[in-house]
Image 1 (cartoon, rainbow, N blue to C red):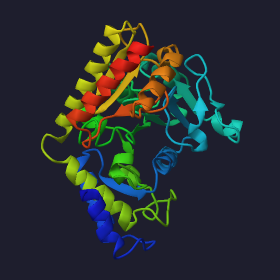
Image 2 (tube, rainbow, N blue to C red; image 1 turned 45 degrees about the vertical axis):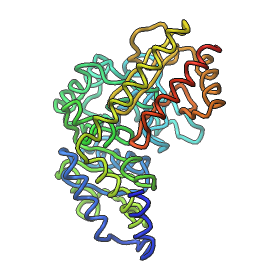
Image 3 (cartoon, rainbow, N blue to C red; image 1 turned 60 degrees about the horizontal axis):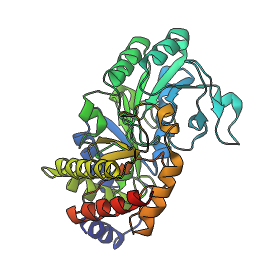
Length: 358
């Protein structure tokens, strides 16, 4: 209700001006206040725009072309990032989507998430050519895969050694796994951060920000171009500002995490009672479940080896009972502040019935 009221109040006056407004400045100040690594921030209209521009900025700042991403991590539908992985530490990208020039994909090096050795090997080969590493600090597009201890720390060390920009894609994790995002949760400081989803409170908003010396390379202060007529429009800023205000309430994220923990524990118990192999991952209010005998899932390859057909049956069974889960075995789930204990109870009751039918 608070977010809707904020939007209604702004809509009564205007939808947009195609120029900066005071509420955009207030929103920017709020983001910088919450996320310690962000000295300056630029609003855009989507997470894809945020990651696309952050990579352009990293290339402009370093004067380098190559980028590193990780197998199973999704960073929007810009050409450089629509690349799937091959085998080996230095596999050059193959376009995932038709329409992506092979020459452009060749600048994208795809490595293995949670394998710092593959990163170190790649940098030993071509580190002086790599503009940035972009990573979901908690991978949310291969279901939910937290970083192994030392992985994010290793990325920070490699980037410092080679003068490479470290970009945390916190479009999913920002303001969700902790108020300050995954970087606050794990205590790792990136050079640039991309944001989306939560920051818009249901409206189309993205943002990228970081170190002042890098952000000052963005036009009009610097030569790296970026602009958007509807970026930072008052309606989206009002929704985002109201959402962040709610998320700053004491105990907000502790309650989210407690709900997600109860949900994951309940799913595992219900599956075990019906002899269904299931494991879960969780960081704050972000979670994932996997139909597998493995006790731990930490690599994309493991996710692809899970029982996808079993997931499909479970998904449709839950849908028949009025519970709408993410429709892909490769998507993370999220508990929100709107979910009640009764919602969790109803979900677990439905899950028990569906597990019994599998």
